[in-house]
Image (cartoon, rainbow, N blue to C red; front, side, top):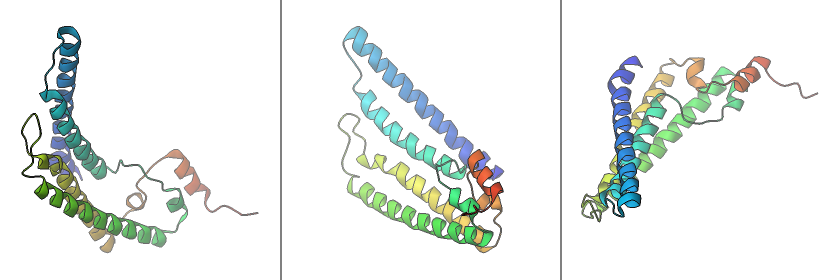
Length: 180
């Protein structure tokens, strides 16, 4: 995971920070120009929107690799290890399939919108779908790797229940609830 973090995640985080900085400067500059000089830069809105789409999907890819997405795992803490493995395999297989559906739909949309251009910048509208393709390709890689690890039997308890919080830990330590 350290290699992935060093060569994949860290550069993406740098790109995300650069996009955020460019968006901040563009929007701030446009606001100042509108209020102080009653003018503005027309490119800022379109470019900020495009950068925001890229920022969101690249950020989602980073969050996936760092296992930082939201989830509810209260029930998983109560299950025995074999049931956790079954849930893990089913959820990763389902997410792999959904990632493929999103990838194929985004690919089709990118092809359809390739000839269409944005009104101000004149860029291809397909640029809005490229970050979705990148995210889903990375997600398919991640879910495939997790499924391979589960088939090889190399999953730790931390892999099976990725979220870590105090309430879930207390529930796991308490064990099954007595219905009396």
